[in-house]
Length: 544
Image 1 (tube, rainbow, N blue to C red):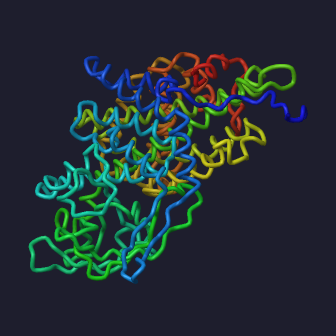
Image 2: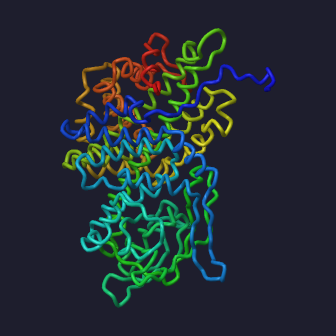
């Protein structure tokens, strides 16, 4: 018989056995807003199935197992042959396979493909974000391959397949394939033009031999990789298959796996090329232009990934405080805790609403929407990903000491939270890209102003913020040193405009009062006490 001192009381039940999609009101409403009515039932059905899987005890256990059992590098087999393979825990393969079968690499030719995939990506991130890296790379490789119709015809059906095949085999023998990428080198980092990997043309048309290295190669267990190398005509994009058509392994030397802060279930490697066979993608010297749409896709996935992490952190915090009692009542009912939770919920909803709006622009594909994406994606990537780390830390604190314990799952979210701000171009890269859009593509600013202008007149704080932004943009002095501030303002004004148009009045009012109106402190939980914070928190509750 257990000792009476070990009776467990006042602990919240696990947040399990619920629909991660349907329980997220902001996400579900965004899907309803951006998907055609005739398609909506089908899309909701898909997302509900994925949401129920994501919220199940079994799948959540797989996420924990994948994180607790990181990949291992196997350089040689038992006989001394070089194999350069990465071994993963079975839970990783289950999660990755579920992501593939749920269409997370199949956006490009489906009706509302980007919105339905974006919502699914946001949901699946909340299980274990590491598996989302190869899903993102595979998805983003499609527009780069489309610069070469022959390559696209060969690879795109496999990359957009809903069949996951983990074994390394010649690509023509696989029904589904995954892609990784290798762009950065140790001497260049984000300055990919400083890369030294050399590409020597071979006799076969479009074929080259690569010699060099990549400091970060994402998803090194993949079937193919897009890499940048210096060809005779300049920096060029190449496709490096892992296995050649005759069944032999391409030269793809895995030197080591990175020991990362978070994202531990996913493998990131240092790779050496020594006479590695590659196929040119696009024209020589046009490497950056070839991958530009791929970069935009991965940056949007960083926004989605951060929005997913924030949503899960908020869901856990609200769930905990809704069941935990202290000082004579539920934590969620205490005015100061309610202020913290409401502030976190605002940040999460704003991120989700913006991310889905950008995905809808990808589906539209029109000139106006493309121009909007040119400025909004780097601004969103800059701001949303930077808000992820402070939010997850504050959400963990809502659980008290329990949030500092691995079993709660919160430390995993905290470790993951800085990642999307660093990958695919860190903060300065994004802010400078916003400047390039402003100075070189006037249509981008016009599209942005037209988008935020749709909410003009609905909130005086938003109107004032738009006016301040225009004044800021008119001042050209010290523009580069002010680039971060500009990116932040652009993102906040766009988030506010979307919430004013689409969110409940209590949410929009609180966001504009705090983020635009100056009624906010330097930390979460400093919202004006006169707002209807209970309604904001209730909206964020993961009811199940």
